Structures are given as structure tokens and as C-alpha cells.
Amino acid sequence: MQDLWKRIQVARGELPADLLLRNAMLLNVCSGESYPADVAISDGRIAGISEPGQAYRAHEVRDLQGRWLAPALMDGHMHIESTMLVLPEFARLVVPRGVTTVVLDPHEFANVMGVEGIRYVLETGRDLPLSSYIMLSSCVPASSFESPQRVLLASDLLDLLKEERVLGLAEMMNMPGVLAGDDQVLAKIQATLAHRLVVDGHAPGLSGRDLCAYAAAGVMSDHECTTTEEARERLRLGMWLMIREGSAARNLDALLPLVKELHPPRAFFVTDDRDPQDLTSRGHIDSMVRQAIAYGLEPIEAIRLASFNTAQYFRLYDRGAIAPGYVADLLVLDDLPTFQVESVYKDGQLVARSGSMLVDIPTPPPSAGNGTVHIGALTRKHLRIAGSPGPVEVIGIEPGQITTLHLREEATIQNGEIIADPGRDLLKLAVIERHHASGRVGLGLVKGFGLKRGAIASSVAHDAHNLVIAGVDDNDILRAAYALQEMGGGFVCVVDGTVQASVPLPIGGLVSPLPASELVQQLHKLDAAAAELGCTLDHPCMTLSFLSLSVIPALKLTDQGLIDVETFTLLPLQKNTTAQ
Image (tube, helix red, strand yellow):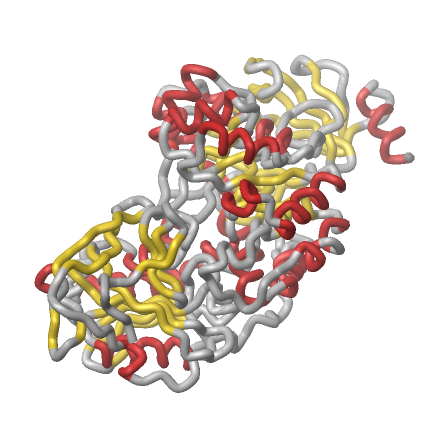
């Protein structure tokens, strides 16, 4: 009550503000205008706005000398695990770029660690110059064809819905479950809506009556649109359009024409999955703003898509704009067209300037997610694929996308086994269950890596995060699996039984405790080692990590076998052949 009364008095000019930002060129995402203004801040919130030189006094005054003043940026859907960084290190990287709020779906940690994985992300987000909110992981596993540490039921999430920083239910990937009225799926949605929280969607390829049913169930958004036709249909049905620009899936260029045509109020920017190399070179949400401005979008609209619209969707009605009563998360820009961030204010405090943090960031608490890779006693027989001459199902890589092609190629046979054929760019692909040492291995073939020798392996394998390994030689595939177990997860490149490069990710087999700069160096060495073996992909482990995601078309592999995502069925690798 006292803070509110004080803010009213500051707004009326009866008391001095804590901070006065004078002579700003204010970017108003509410009205779409830009104009000179002074902005008064009290107790972390904006108290008042006036013409320059009028009305306000303050304990601290900063003259912006005509620099642009914008609301700080927000990411409306991302997975912290994809950055491979703990939240404090991620904050150190993105806050100087102007990002002060993120909405996280920790379903990678949830697949590996259960509810404790969600609570771990909540805990590591405390006391940072970055507001982190959580969307509860709706699909653990993503489908019945994946094997997580354990299945999360609606009852597991009920207590978490009461947490202050929980905003709703994360991407509802189980579209068949929604459309078929699955009891658990509907229970999660109903519980979320009963708490007046939001339900995120995930609906690649869904249209017509099925999309209507999906929206009617209470699903409010989608980040899987890759065409303007898909995006337009969702907007027409009242859904919110999350425009994604990740590292593996990049949809901004494809969807910006629709934004320029419609200027939809129900659209905002998200990154979904960005790896640390991309973060340190291209940036985060700030890069999307730059890209949109370069495309020809008005700068204020580009910023609105990265701030105000995001806040409106998540019902964070006190942030995302520069207006009285709003949280004072602000950016000072040296240049608008290139979105050059000069300084960043969080809750009215200067926290970053000229690309560097000005405040200390706490060390994250110890993780409960160490030692999560357990593969048991695997031998070469677990990698054997019995077969005969004839066509075989093959996963085809689509560069720049997390979707895959469903190919059919002639099998290469040796002693009654289907084997890798690097001369035709056909590698053996193995997905090994790693939570319970069950010995379960899914086997298949993949085309598009270009690898001529050895194997590359990852414990990052969306979404259940079993081990996924592509290779030419079974011995190297096996060595890579054991190497991942020994280091608690991560990435490895193996040739002739020797680990050539590795990136340990001991926290859940997903995240590194290292600073971003050191992690990026390790990743560069890994990519270079894969390139020496003939790999033609820039970041092969990022591509590898999506080959087991059974809810993204067209063909994927899990520990349970080969999945035709479009028919949602298990496929034999070769007709009339049993994989052993």
C-alpha cells in the first residue's frame, strides 16, 4: 500500500522519483509512436512520463541525450536446456542484449528428472537480473513411443500450478490425445484453465476441423507454423501465433510477410531452441528484432512482437511497455535500425551497459541431475539389424529444419545384416534407452550427415533424451555410448575406438556448468572433429538431437523403434524383416 501511494505521489510530481531518464526518444508500443519524453521511475516501476524538462525531479537523473528508450525484450517460449547453460550463465549472456524476461518450458529436465527437474529450473531462476517464468511440461513423454525417466501425470502437476512463477501448461504436443479425448491430456488442460492460466500449443500440420477441435479444447497458441497459410489459419481461429527463430528451426523469414500484411495483435517472437554457438554469435530475441527491422517491419512493431504482445498473451499485464505502473524493464538504444543496445535497466536498476553485466549473478545451486546416464551392458549384438536385399526405410535430414524426410533406399547387406554405407551417405542410427539400463535399442538408417568414418553421439535427444548415435562402424557406436555414460552425458565424436572430441553435459546429460565461452570452444572442437570425418553439417549434434522427436514429421527413431509420425505408427525398418 505504501509503495502504491508513493508511486501516485511521484507520478503527480509531489515526491521525487528514484530515477529520472531525461531526453529519451520513447518508443511507445501501446500507441505505435515515438516522441521525446522524460520517464520517472519509483521502486522499480514507471511512475510517470512527461515532455522533456517538465514535471519530474529525482534522486538520480540520467540524460539520455536523445537516445531511443524501449521496453526490454521477452522470449515467450524457450527451453533453457537447449542453450546447454545453467540459467545464471544464460542471464549473463542475454541480459546485456536487452532480454529481461523468459518463459521456459523445462520439459527436457522433466523427461530426465521428473518433477524435480521442473523445480530445479524454478530454483536456479531466483535472484537473477532476468525474470524467468515456467510453463509446466505437458507431455512427458512427448508420445507413447518415447521412454522418459518416468511419465508425468496430471496429478504430478497440480501443486506446481500454484507456484507464483508458473504461467500455465507448456506446448501440448499430444495432438492425437487432445483429439481423442485422452483423460490425462484433458485433465492437464482443465486444471490449467481452472487456475486461469494459459495453454501453449504445438500443432505442426494440423488444419481444418482438427485444428478447430484443438483450439476448442483450450489450446491458445502454436509455435510450429512454417508457412503463412498455417499461420493465417491459426490467427483466424483466435489462436496466438508464436513466430519461432531457433537454431535448427528458423521460421521468421517465412512468416514476416504475413505480419506486414495483417499486423496481427496476437503474434510474438520466440526462440524455442537456440544453441550456445548461435547465442554467442547471432544473439537471442534481439536478433529477431534486428532481422525483422532489416526485412522492412517498422521498428516499433518489431519491438512490440518481442515485448508487449508476449506479455499480453501470458497475462503479465504490468510489463512489456513503457507506461505508468509498468515494471521498469527498459533498454537504451544507441541505434534503432541495428538495435544497438547501449544499456539495460531491470526493475529500474542499471544492470548492463555496453555489452557487459554491471551486477553480480549468483552461482546456481548444486544440481540433482548428475549421473543420469545408465545404459547397462550393451554389446555389438544390440546393434545388429537382420535384413535382406531390398528397400529399407531411411530418415532423411532436412538442413535448417527439425522435420525429416521419409526416404526409401536399397539396403546394403553384409552377412545377412543391414549395414551403414558411407559411400551412399547412409549411416546406422541407434537410440539407446538411458534412464533405467533396460538394454532397449531402436535401430535405423539416416541420410544427410556425410560422415565417412566413426560415429557421433548425443545424450541430448528430444524429448525423452535417450542416447542417439549415428555412425559408420558398430564398434565406434558402442564406444560412443559408453563414453557418454562415463562423462554423465553430452556429445562425443569417436573414430577407430578413440574419442576425438567431447562436450560433457553432466547436469541431466543436457547442460554444462561451464561459462558460455568455454562451452562454445568445446562445441567448435567437436564440430571440427566431425568435419574431419566427412560430416557436411555445421552443427551435427544439434541435428542429431532432433532425430528421436516422435511428434515432428516425417520419420523419427526412438528406443522403441522407427516412427512414422504422420500415421503415428511403428514401422519395420524393412518389410518382412525383424530388427534384432
